[in-house]
Image 1 (spheres, rainbow, N blue to C red):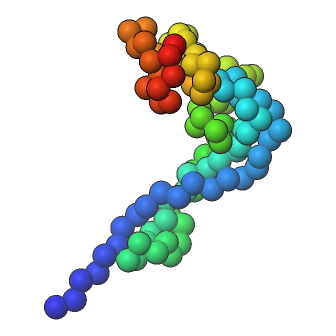
Image 2 (cartoon, rainbow, N blue to C red):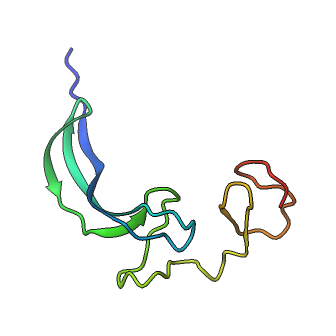
Length: 105
């Protein structure tokens, strides 16, 4: 009996790193990325099937920036509070402690 394990899997490719700050976390780690899809055999990518479109994203908090790269980001109006300990944004107002680091809000 012989089994063949194959399929299509995504792979994130970092195209370029920019030295500008992220509007969500204020770290200077904005990267231009692309998600390509590869045909794989036994979880080894063999060749690219689909080439993705480039987008800007923060390497620290993984926030995807807008296409015009003006510094705004999707969901900016939803972000209400920022943790003083880990600098992540909390969407829910009912939290007394940060769900990421456990610090008091």
